[in-house]
Length: 319
Image (cartoon, rainbow, N blue to C red; front, side, top):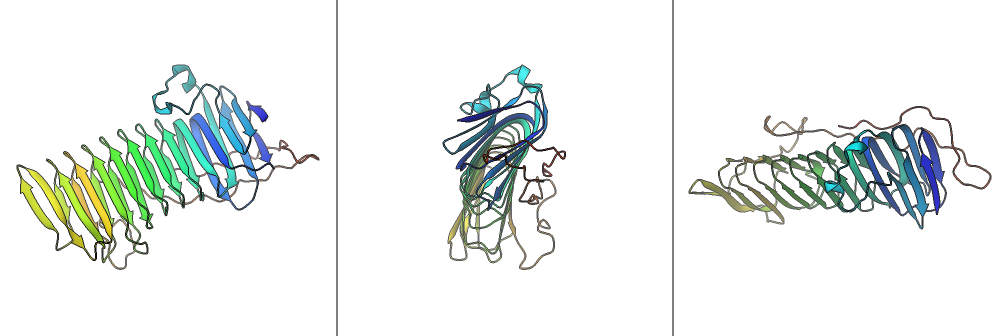
């Protein structure tokens, strides 16, 4: 096992294979980008407080605080730990399994084909161009996913979810008060969407023509529908919208207790992908970060990691 303690800005390169990446930080920013290169690179451009521990063993690269465990991550609380801050950027092979845990930090993961799991207490998460299975759990942080082709599982107490241009991916989302906006790419195949929230708002925009079995239920919330042919029933204040769009190749299920639900139709051609989204529903736009770090650190004679001069922060813009 190789190990480093990082207490100041530093760059490291790893020639040994990396199959799994694990990152756990408090405050600051985490950027992970997939690269076609076979090696992995790390840059810590800013750090304050407790040093980060970097380890590489048996194909697993870990960048974390020693006292911040992955197990029970969302229930972990140490008031003293909040006096920490780090900006961490990593480039890893596209097939790497990525696990990111953040407390108060923003995270961006892009260009990864392997499984991705993100856990966050607060702070926003951006997922761009991912093709493997995705899992995101937050307490109050929001998640924005753009151009994903892998299945997404989202769980939150009050965080919002925005999915833009999902291409044939299944989306499972559960929240208590968080809002959900799901926009399906018309070029994608029929997909399976299941959204559940207690009081949050739900807006789903389907391609035109749409192809899905629809089941929409709310106990006391309102339902708006842009599609003809769906059946509406109202009993004791509860509203239900059901029916088949197209051949029913996909499936859409949306359920709330008191939150409103909007079923929207994407125009055949459009300039603005949010023209039909209600203004009172959370919206976001994500842009893919660059697929590389700002510089490649030099290697020593043995091919091991060598420190290089820092050119300042290279973290990507986070929504």
